[in-house]
Length: 343
Image 1 (spheres, rainbow, N blue to C red):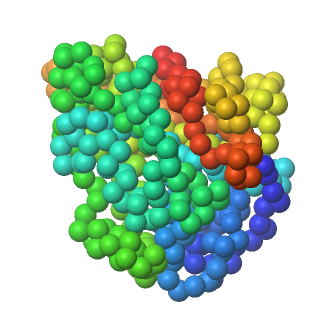
Image 2: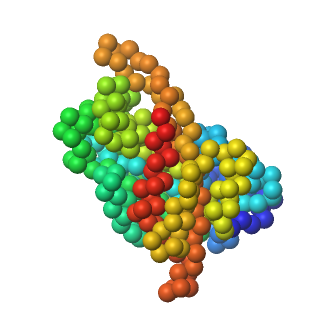
């Protein structure tokens, strides 16, 4: 699912102005000529709509992932070189359902500010093998063209007691990145469905801060305790609530995976297929990153750990509705999580 890219972006577009306020004009232009943007979002109204706020946030997060994941940046560069755009299907993040200090626990840390942007829970996906639950957040206004969020939360109380204690030491010092100014702007957006440009810029800037690590660098001993019983908890310990992955919607994920493998991309060995057969997913293995860890003597060391990655998905039409099947699948999600387990 690719389309011819826009050759230029008008500085008069509401979405461009909003995104540029967060990432600068050059990066905003790059994002809006890389992603497939619904024409509805390209108006020049003075007041940004909640869908435009949501799309600006997603575009900024997409740019952030490209900076952190070289293999994703390589793929996107290839798509741009072909003169095509990317259908951004969804982004995913991981949260902690446990002691998280000033930060609300689990998915609530994100649903609280994504709801005023027009998001609602479109599906609940138990992930028992991972001791997690996933929630798909779907945009009410433009569900097929504004990217979804897949927010998973790890249930700390299902881990062994010693691992629970390590999790509390790592995550209980988390800070809340959303402040009074952001809440005031979010309330206006929630009440009216749009807001002033200044309020929209405040929302996007604050929301971007939420997609990071809100707790201090973990102690190495605590990280290793988490890693033993939950590689997902260990990933959150180093990466926090950063975009775990961004996903391109494509017509034939099976063929694309074969093509990318031939081009030397480190692909997941298999394609995950949903129980209904209509949703198929695979991914490039997570890039490695270096992260700091605290030692018992107070010093720090750097260690290479799995970072974020890039995913691909094919969605067929649901014959019952005649619309694109926007659901997820617990089995697919469990399989995709494995790409950050490469040590």
